[in-house]
Image (cartoon, rainbow, N blue to C red; front, top):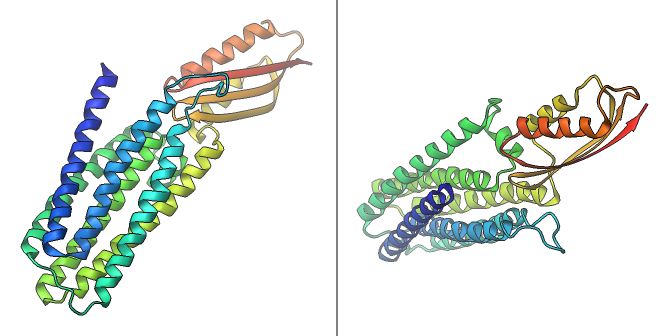
Length: 302
């Protein structure tokens, strides 16, 4: 039931992005506005993003196989990287080039400015709503009250990281676009429209760099978050354990975590080693219930 609701919500988001994209493209074709062209590109990226994430999640849910014995959970990270490198970087570069051409073209004009302004105000409302929704989700998950940038870089959730970053940069892009088109309307000088388009493209390029860096790290394999790592260490803090020789963690996907540990236990510990391991694994799973845990613990007696 929950999965069906999630799919319905994503379908609504996709249709909203698609409708917005169509309106912006039509507006650009009628007006020739550089900022509206940039917004059209951004909406196309939104649609592509939704489609690729669905593909990534389906790959991630395939389960284990002989070739991929821990499954393909990191497929979401791969497709998110594709979005960052192709859609964001390519779209940003295209926006900068086209807006730059308009800037150098003395005959560049913006027609039907009122129509452009109306579209941008509607886009502003949509993006503000999306950012507020994403921020509320972050607040509910950010139990340690980390600074926003620290939380995003520490997050292992591809959907949350990509979605919120995309919406945040989209909001900034709409604000710049509005400023550019309003200055064009007031001064009757289309140079501000071109500058707004260039700045919007640069924002897309910055988003691409940030996301590519984050998803490269996730693809290479990141450890548990600092918050989860602290909980794991607490589970190993037992009187029977003399020392934790080695503790390594690796995110196999957004919600799967591999834990490998080597511990030294007391020779005359009250519990048998296998019982101690079972207790530790149960404690870890109880401490981090949102993750599927794969736990491998070796013990040495001293």
